[in-house]
Length: 110
Image 1 (cartoon, rainbow, N blue to C red):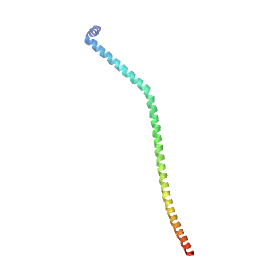
Image 2 (cartoon, one colour; image 1 turned 135 degrees about the vertical axis):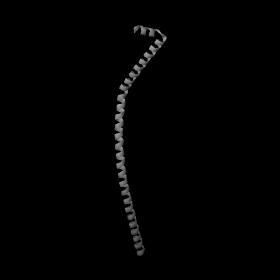
Image 3 (cartoon, rainbow, N blue to C red; image 1 turned 120 degrees about the vertical axis):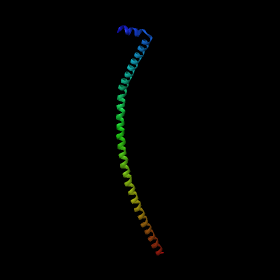
């Protein structure tokens, strides 16, 4: 068995295969090292960003509810404005009628 490995190591093909195998092992070690390093560095960052995202989503939902409440309030206020405009127009009509009565009374005195 050892003689076979010695013969393989002495040939060019054996040397090429050995180099390729060592390069593959080195690449695997480099890949795994990088993956574990990136996982350890970026996992806390990702968790922090996810927490921030969850907080922002809650804020957006709260703001949407605020918008809904404010739109309802605007609708009520617009109805009040319409009602008050009708009251004002009625008062204007009454005022115009009173002004015409006053004018008629002034004209009768003369």
